[in-house]
Amino acid sequence: MSAPDPWSTMPSIPLSVPDVLAVERAESTYFRRFLDHAAPEDRARLGIRTAAVRDGVATVVTADPSRYWTKAMGFGPDAPVDDALVADVVAFSRAAGAAQGTLAIAPLALPVDWSAICEHHALVAASTWSKYACSVTEVVPGRTDLPVRPLTVDDVPGWARIIREAFGMTDPDLTPMLRGAVEDPVAQVFGAFDGDLLVGAGALYVVDGVGSLNTGGTLPTHRRRGVQSALLAARAAAAADSGCRLLTAETGGSDDDPSARNLVRAGFVRAYHRVNWTWTA
Image (cartoon, rainbow, N blue to C red; front, top):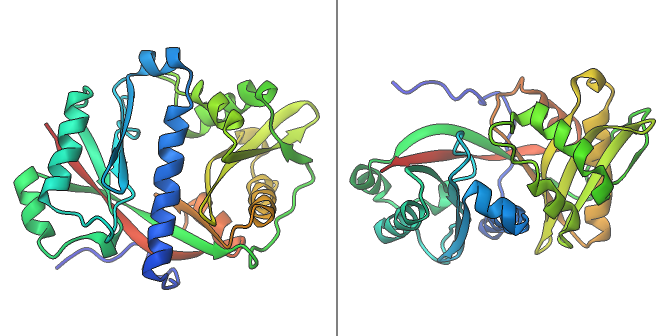
């Protein structure tokens, strides 16, 4: 018997096939742009390589011990997932210096022979993440007693500190890539301040009418003050001004994960689970 679904108590909403593809495309676009906009010296130091693979993307960061940034995603029915696609992803990643990586594929894009493909390429289901979605008009505004405003490049060191503490990007330090996100015209980054101190921040990438919310965190000293809820609201307003109709975010935690609770309070509903399939050379 299979293990019970750890998210079974969370309500879900159906997304149309075009909406799921748009959500996946928004994430894959953000993921690649985040890496591509790093300074050339950081790309060389971290071993960053990116490529288009059919209608998706593949990325490699050889210096990242977590292998989070060595990933392929954004695939869908317009360019079906098959054995050859997996082979292309693995070949690119190995040529770029990766010995292990992940394929993140929406459930509706998995082919009927996926089990055979997994066996052929020794793919293993490593973890499951949840995708959340919300209409841009249905976001529940959050509040904090701290002022929230867009970040500039001068705020990047403060944002880097937050992300290092939230995600452990310390060895190696991946936070120099954050400057590229602030300078990217597709992205908007907002922060909450306590005086001159940046205490929380989060990014928004707008891609084809979908706003991808990501790279958010709050200093431990300022949690439970509504910082992330207010940042969600600020990014939702910016997404609406940019013509977005749908917002999306993801979390790897359960119903009790703080990120999931923040999303649900803001009006987001779980749309689907997506398995991270790991290959090893």
